[in-house]
Image (tube, rainbow, N blue to C red; front, side, top):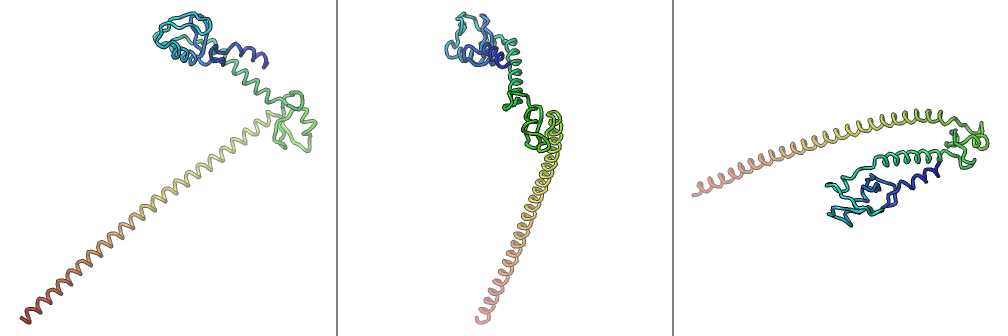
Amino acid sequence: MTTTLEKIGQHLQCGICRDRYKEPKTLDCLHSFCKKCLENYYTIRYKDALKVPCPVCRQEMVLPDTHIQGLKTNFHLTSIIQEISEQEKLARSEEKNKCQKHQGEMKRFYCETCQELICSSCAVLDHCKPRHHYIDIGEASLKYKHSLIDMISDFSKEIKGLEQSLAASSQAQEESARNVTKTVKAVQDKAAKMRAEITSQENKLIDNIQQIQQDGKQMYA
């Protein structure tokens, strides 16, 4: 399966970057290249030119007004690449599920004791009951899916509680800040009032002293 995919993949490579096509654009000669590769090819070698030769066969073509952007996208090639990518992903997934110990036998069980996937031979030879407890992979998937959902639900509750605590803490901090500001203002007002009272008393005493002094001068005059 993998060999076949590799052979097909060789025909899905851009002639410029030698990598798999990305947004393939087709020229008049029917050769296709990555959009980005053609943009670099045009900008570096043929900027502002009306005609551009194919990088492979050298057949010239007149570019549309929007240059490389205006070339036809090879949707058929894009579809093939998407399908091949899906098949490769599936092949990699299947490869991961093959047992390395027992000639690529598929892992069809989950050993709860060791917390790993095992094949039939593993179950008989290395993970035999009662020392090990294993279940069918489908059953394990369903079981741990529910456990994961419950765990996420618990975490969500904890996060919500934490958010509420932080909100309450924030409100408490704001209330505390308001109280501090209010108290400081009260102290400042009280101090200002006391200063005004002291100044008033000071002025009265000074006036009295000056009046006494004035009266004394008049008495001995």
